[in-house]
Image (cartoon, rainbow, N blue to C red; front, top):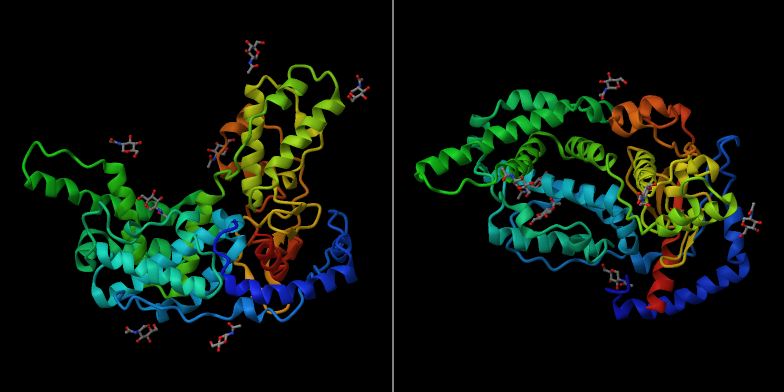
Amino acid sequence: MDEGVPLSRLTSTVVLLLLLLLLLSFEGCNSLEPLLPDLSPNAAPQPFLPILAPSPLTPFTNSTIPRLSGECALNFTAAESMMSVTSIDCWGFFAPLLANVMCCPQLEATLTILIGQASKASNMLALSGSASKYCLSDIEQILIGQGAAENLRRICSIHPSNLTKRSCPVSDVEEFEKSVESEKLLAACRNIDPVKECCEQVCHNAISEAAEKIAAKTSQVLTLNGPGTLPMNSSTVVHDCKNIVLRWLASKLDPSRAKEVLRGLTNCKVNKVCPLVFPDMKHVAKECSNTVRNQTECCQAMESYVSHLQKQSLITNLQALDCSTMLAMKLLKSNITSDIYSLCHITLKDFSLQGLITQFMITIEESGCLLPSLPSDATFDQSSGISFICDLNDNIAAPWPTSSQLSASSCNKTIKIPALPAAASAQSGLYHRGVFFLVLLLTSTVTAVLS
Ligand SMILES: *[C@@H]1O[C@H](CO)[C@@H](O)[C@H](O)[C@H]1NC(C)=O
Ligand SMILES: *[C@@H]1O[C@H](CO)[C@@H](O)[C@H](O)[C@H]1NC(C)=O
Ligand SMILES: *[C@@H]1O[C@H](CO)[C@@H](O)[C@H](O)[C@H]1NC(C)=O
Ligand SMILES: *[C@@H]1O[C@H](CO)[C@@H](O)[C@H](O)[C@H]1NC(C)=O
Ligand SMILES: *[C@@H]1O[C@H](CO)[C@@H](O)[C@H](O)[C@H]1NC(C)=O
Ligand SMILES: *[C@@H]1O[C@H](CO)[C@@H](O)[C@H](O)[C@H]1NC(C)=O
Ligand SMILES: *[C@@H]1O[C@H](CO)[C@@H](O)[C@H](O)[C@H]1NC(C)=O
């Protein structure tokens, strides 16, 4: 986390650090927390107050004009607002915390839209090997100029080859449209409902079907090459062809519509997987296995275990549910058979990033922040820094899974726990939402000086 702090920033940083110290001595470090409203589920919904960052933020938001290669034919104007949203979702030191739910999905959608839009002129749904290198580097330069992290390639595992056709045999628009039922594909995906899509997978299935159709052209090519040629791993080809299909969709929709579709599709995938890394649980196993001998000791072990999970990343409420199930399965495997969650009052929020994360110097209210299952983008404001919306309606006890729940699909899971937003968009009135602010300046300054 200590890389990429330009020296030039350090100079302005010192001045700002003084401002910051003034602010802190005025507020007192701990009194930042009382600025935040009570989050107990019984409290009436009330707006969050921003933690005020000292102004001006300008030195950190001055977009540097990037030096571009001149070798990339993508039209950056066509996705200008997409790119500035990406810079905020992937902002500097926060990018790793938002990588899985916000930053990388938004970056991938941006790449897809840029190539899709460019295909209108080039007739190609993929970049060549050399163009992909220049374009990825130009995109990075633009995003970094707007404040994005400098190591997005690594954070999001993006390589230049992700912009090419890879193993997919079709990248020509005309050939694509001849090979698939393009009207049907567009109809299935033009207006996806991001909640229903995750269960019914109408657009997802249409994309898979189209990808399989164009992937099938590989075997025709190979047959022409004569027998004896090794067949390409077909699941890899289909996977690569799905990107071609997405780019085609992005060329048929306007960028903002395309973004909704792409992010909606990614969300379904994101919400199915717990992104947290579970450390070894020997200690919990020792204190809690079989019959719990001493509840205090077992719960202390559990608390300490969960605190390691709370330092990792921001997750959605559905991911928290995945994580609680995954942890329970691991506990069951360690012979912990009683419901430790209810014994130790573990809630879904316990899986979220929380506390004062000193590593990042981010103030997060004591009770944590779970993102809604359909997280909105982060926003940037000169006075309050980076902010994003937390779902505050998630003080839900972590469910100790029964065997039927372990096999239930994510669509059925939400039925068991009504407060989880299977219908978040449909019934948003039911959910208390608050805007969560990260103190951008605080972070940049302190990290820069400490590193
Ligand atoms: C901000 O950008 C402008 C031009 O875009 C430049 O003149 C100015 O020096 C920059 N300020 C800082 C602090 O980098
Ligand atoms: C790039 O996209 C913008 C907005 O869609 C459009 O106005 C402009 O003509 C495009 N430029 C080129 C070179 O195609
Ligand atoms: C890019 O390609 C690599 C393989 O070279 C793959 O592992 C990675 O998941 C791809 N990234 C994305 C965002 O699809
Ligand atoms: C293709 O590769 C994937 C992993 O890359 C593997 O799981 C799968 O079994 C392979 N399929 C075939 C048909 O070889
Ligand atoms: C449980 O452990 C705590 C701390 O080690 C100890 O104070 C307490 O007496 C123990 N309780 C029982 C019932 O053994
Ligand atoms: C779980 O208990 C069984 C029998 O009680 C034992 O054989 C097994 O080794 C235990 N597993 C773990 C991970 O402790
Ligand atoms: C949901 O669960 C019911 C029974 O519990 C089952 O019949 C149904 O197929 C499940 N639906 C999905 C989408 O898994």
